[in-house]
Length: 127
Image 1: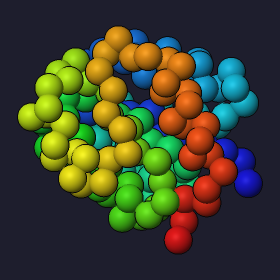
Image 2: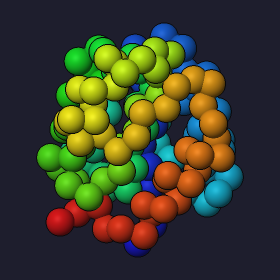
Image 3: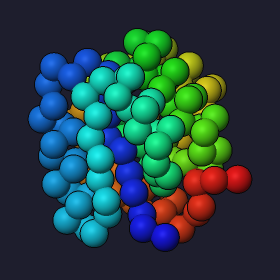
Image 4: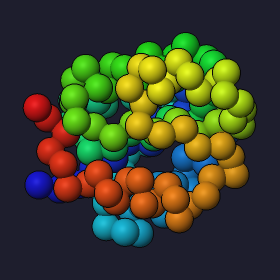
């Protein structure tokens, strides 16, 4: 099975982080899709089997947590990650309680992010 991941922005206004991560992960041989809004990301999740979804957003924005909850509903074993400029405990509680696997503050520690993603690539995202 090909290993696929989705990198999504909830705002679509600044895609630099998504593009940098696309380059990083595709360089490791992963198939990477990029969505520039929540609606597009939900459609892509519905039509594809992803092993990981990374959302570049503020976790206090409901769209980010809702997108990752949607991903877990369709692919229960998927790895979900939020990247944020707001790393306070208050902004990470809802995503973690909703089943998000990791929350990273920006700038992202690429080595740690790679470790989280690689550790979970062996799992089938479907039940």
